[in-house]
Image (cartoon, rainbow, N blue to C red; front, side, top):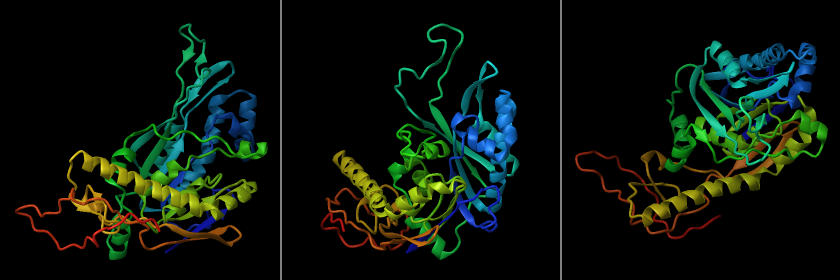
Length: 384
């Protein structure tokens, strides 16, 4: 099993190198309009933005910034397959211009434009970014009425192109089964409020690069990719930045394509991709270990499992988890100037060894059951 990952260091307003309806999932975090660290980039794209900011016309500046993003969203719509999903991590902005402090609701503006393209709006996720900083409050301190509510969350907009995706071939059905997530992961991931992911600090040492790239927490694209795509799919990030979405796609057995206008980020992305194997395999092992801990706790509580995973032998809650399979990364190497190839192990790397007495696989009365293979009885928890 192999995946390919391509980077194009150019503007994503015209993604001519990507064919129509060839992308299964788009995950991105674009530059946030009206956040000062992005002023320079937006102004380079449209000098009118810089002029509006100098005149402290926030309304015009914000609209012009979003028009730059609109061109990218239109291209994303073109390259996305029917049934494909779009996930946009975006934060609103607050800013004082012309002696007037106000909110710039970026999420609402982006959502409005995406819906005009014909995308179907799905439930939005709120990413709660907790902070205990004593200076986080804005405005007049303890005196009403001119203090302001703090922004401690960002949005993850989720939209679909057309009807829900259909899986008709045996090959795609098999990939979908192996791409299942655990029952307890589903209950956590598909909540509309995420409070367990902290924001990333910027790690670039070059101050000029820090001004041109925002940190994107690995857990966010990794989770979204596993929620809304299957193995072998192709994931697009039109604002690749430090390459986090590409790393998450590779760790999940998906192909990826990224566009990034700042080619000076290439060395950082390269070092991340070539050193990916250990980090990705740690993430996979963590998911498995978390499930094993969940199993042990449930068995200790005298609760019964009705299914067993055929690859690892551990109990699972639902029949859809029986075919779940993680593919460890075997290697990640550069195969062209801006292209990488990742190879994977095909066999499971561990076998569950605990007492299976808590798994009740007895067919229910009155229901016909298909013959199924549950694999050999596990004898040891062995990590390969």
